Every structure is written in structure tokens, then in C-alpha cells.
Length: 85
View 1 (cartoon, one colour):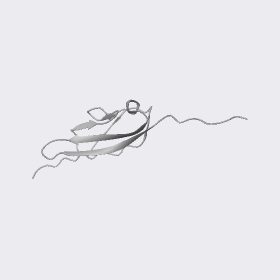
View 2: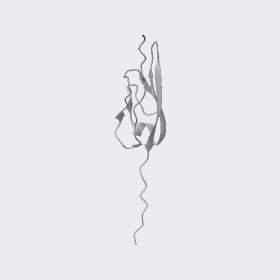
View 3: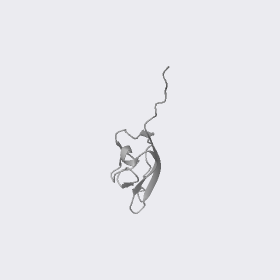
View 4: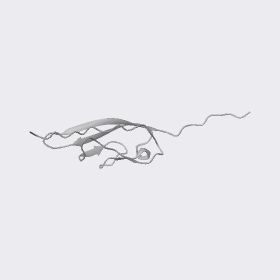
């Protein structure tokens, strides 16, 4: 029996552009991470990625490769809109 790795990425809630970097995780470790704002080791930096929706891919190579994609939303600073009487 050949081991089948699982690159399924854990859920990431929407982030603010000024949030700290987050370490992405998957069912099985190893492999490589690609996409805007993410390092090869899976550290996602919202400031580097910028505001918007970013597709991140985790790939585990080998005899039976596995990969998965998620979309991470990075929100900008909220705009305060008020008036004083």
C-alpha cells in the first residue's frame, strides 16, 4: 500500500491588512506553499499580500502527490464615517 499525503489546508478566517503574519497548516506537513504573501514554509503575511482575495496553494510532491487551494481574504482599514452636530 502506498501512502497518500493529504495537502488539505486548514481554514483561515478573513484577516486585516495590519494583522500579524499567520502560519498556515494542512493535514499533512511538508511540501511547499505558493501564492501572494506566503513564504515557502507557509507563513502568510497579510501586509505583503495586500488587500483583496488571494489564492494560496499547498503542494506535496512524491509518488502520490497532493495539492489544495484556499482563498484568503485580506480586508483594508475600515473607514470611519461620522458627523458631529
